Length: 125
Length: 110
Image (cartoon, rainbow over all chains, first blue to last red; front, top):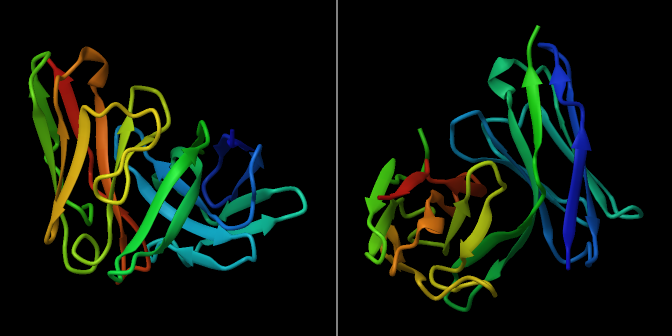
């Protein structure tokens, strides 16, 4: 059974860089999309971006200028860096495994079926 | 402002059937499949419905999903107290080249 274990600094000051890592245990690392999602306190989910085992990335346009997602296939890990954080970046950050592809109709399916437990990141001076 | 639109709240009594709607556009719901996630208080989201109407192993058949045009719906029949949670719809958006979520619907079991 695939499990995702995530870790990283939980308290940052404004302008610092958020850094989180997610390790994949019990399953294949290749053939999937590895995503980061965040949830500000009392608010909804926001997709941050994804990476494949080969290093191909997609980012949320609203965060693209500050986000880097990287992968270490030798350790089955992927990481998130978010620069120049502000209080608006305070949130629970989740890592997740994504599956995606095209049906014959041309529709693209993409869903996240395994999630980490989440890491609370607080940005405060 | 979320790309997909959901009602902020829904409610029902035990045993009832409730539905939650999700409205999008041609670049997301019309073009691609819809997923639903359930988030119990204080926990990570859990995949509830994928590819419009498919249930992952272990999800009760009380939960069902449907899609038509630019809208989708989640239906829960035989409502139970443990169904009280936040529910999010999501889909791939071709314009953003990424996942977009609805704002979430808080389901209360009265």
